[in-house]
Length: 248
Image (cartoon, rainbow, N blue to C red; front, side, top):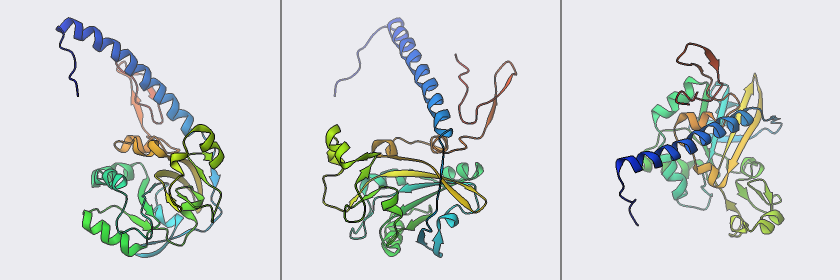
C-alpha cells in the first residue's frame, strides 16, 4: 500500500480545506437524508410474531422492553450453523453497555434476532462474552417477512428491495446465488404507540454494516436523536436528529 505524498504545510492546508468543503457538503446531505428517513410513512404490524429469549417466549411488543422504539439487528445465524456469521460477530463485538445506555436514554431498545435456536445463540453468546439482548426467531415467519432469510420455497426472493429478476438485471445476483435458505444482514426499526407496533425502516447489504455509535443507530429511527441544540449566538433550533454545522 502506497503512503500519502509528502508536501509542505501550506500545500497540505490547501488540500485539507478542499476536503473540508466536501465533508461539510456530505454532512448537510446526510442531515437532509436523515430528515427524509424520519418522514417515511410506517406500516402497522398485524402478525403475531413469537420469539424465544433467556426469559422464555416473547412477542415483538415484548422486545421493546417498555420503550417507545425498537431496533432489530438481523444477525446471520442459520439453524444448521454451529456459530454465527463472522461479519455480524465483528459488528456485535463493538456493542457495549455504554451504547445501549445511550439508546435507552432516547427511549430506544436495540436487540439482536437470529433464526438459530436459542440454545445455539446462548452458547455462542457466552463464548463471545456478549451481554446484549439476543432472541431466536426459530420457526417464525419474522426473518422471511423482513427479507433477511431468502428461501423460494417459503416466499418469493426479495433482498434490499429488489426481486430476483431485478437483481439479475442489475448485476447483483451475488446476493441470491448461494444455496437456499440464504441468510442476509439487515436492520429493522419499529415504533410503538401503546400496544400497536409499526415498522418504520429497514436497511440491508452494505448499509447494515455502515453504522457507528448510538447517534448512527438513532438516525435510522422515526424519532431521530431527539435533541435540541443552541447555536453559538443563542438562537435555539430544533433539529430532531441533525447536529448543527457550527463551523459553516
